[in-house]
Image (cartoon, rainbow, N blue to C red):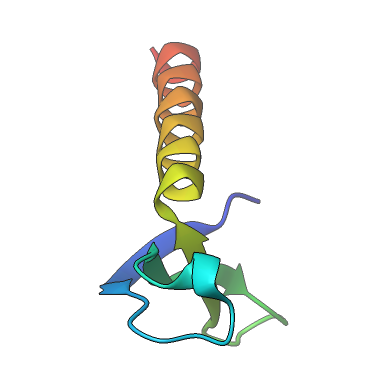
Length: 79
């Protein structure tokens, strides 16, 4: 069973204040993915799950590269 992303929300932010000086001015991205987990028991409708993430920009770019790589593999295998 492959889960399907059915919706996504995102927010971009900059840390304006923190008790840690190094964190001030840091950028981050908050993602909310809505995942269709498929039908549970027989006859039931699909189940959706919210997945929340907060990533630094380097983490986001690494995540994006991984998703693009996975898409390339899926496209290759389905051809």
